Image (cartoon, rainbow, N blue to C red; front, side):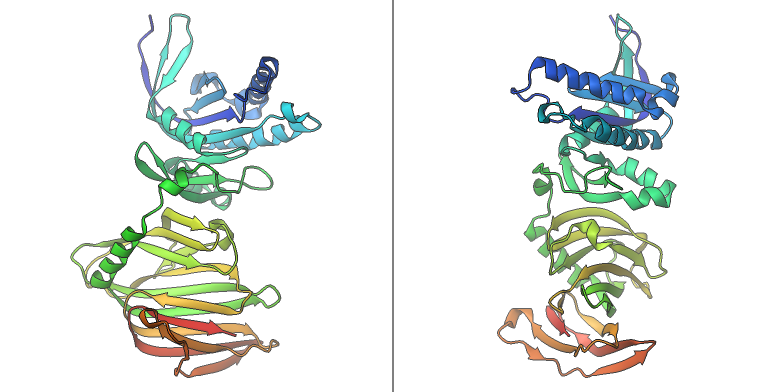
Length: 401
C-alpha cells in the first residue's frame, strides 16, 4: 500500500540517455552508462548544495527526473553543469561508451506519493510536460517549456541571451512554442530532427485566411522600410521595418503574423530578430509556426491590444542577414497610405541603388519604378530614400544596389 499523496508545484529537470536501448549495446555497457549519468548528477554542485527536502528525485529507466521546488533556475543550472561534466567524461571514450543525453525542463503540478518501501513516485502534468519536451530533443539538446522559459528570461538578460525560441511543437494535441538553451558549446543550437515540428506548422490555407482577414480589419497608415549595410564585404544588412497600423474591427488586435524571407540559409535565431511596439517596448514572440532555412513565419503579441480607431499604434520588426546578391524584395499584403523605403551604405562603396516594382498577380514584367529617390550624405554614410503613397495590395518593390 502507498501513503497519502502530496500535491506540489515543481520545476523539472528530466534527461535520458540517447541510444541506450540500442540492441548492439551489451547489458554491461547499458548499466555502466546509467551509473555514469547518476554519478555525474549526484556529484554536481547543484545537486549537492540543494536541500533534499526541496527535490523530487525519480529514476526513469533510461535516465532520471528531478523536480525542484525552489524555482526555475536550479534545473537550468544543473543542465549547464551536467553538459560540462559530460565533455570531460567522454574524452578518450570508445564510441560505444560515449554518454549522450537530451534534457527537458518544464514546470507544473505533480503528485508525490511514497510506496510501501518508502520510495517516492511522482506523477502529474508537470512531470509529463517535461518528459514530452525532452522527447522532442536530440543529443545535447536542452529544451524548455514556454512557462519555464518565460520565467527564466524575465529573471535576467543573461538567460534571455541563451534561452532562445525554437519552434512550435504539438504536445497532447496542443501547440506550444518551445525554447532551446545553448551557449559557449553547451546545448545544441540545431533544430531537433523529431518530425513533430512539421506537424505543428500552420497550413498555407490558414495563412491565406489570416491575410484576407487583415485586409478587411486592418488599415496600414504608414510603412517605413530601412536597410542599412553594416559590412560591405559580407553584405551584412540590418533590416528595420516600421508599420503604423489602425484596427478597423470591433475585435481588439492582439497579435501580428510576421514573414521573413532570406537569400541565405539561416536559423531563426541567427537573424537576431527583435520586434517592438510604437514606444520601443519589446514584443513577446508567442509562436514560430514555420522555420525553413530561407523562410520564417512567426507571431508576436502586443503588450496592449490595439482597439478600434486607435491612432499612432504599430510595431517595428528588426533583423540582420547577409544580402549577398545585393537585392531585396518586399511584398505588401494590405493597402498602405504612406510608404518610405531607404538604403544606407558606406559612401566609400560604388553602389548604385535602383528600385523596381510589379504587382504579384501580373508578374509578367518588372519595370523600373518611376518613384524618384533622394540621396543624402552624412558622416560617411550615403542614404537613398524613395517615398510614395497609396500602395495597393500585392504590390512588390525590388531594391538592388
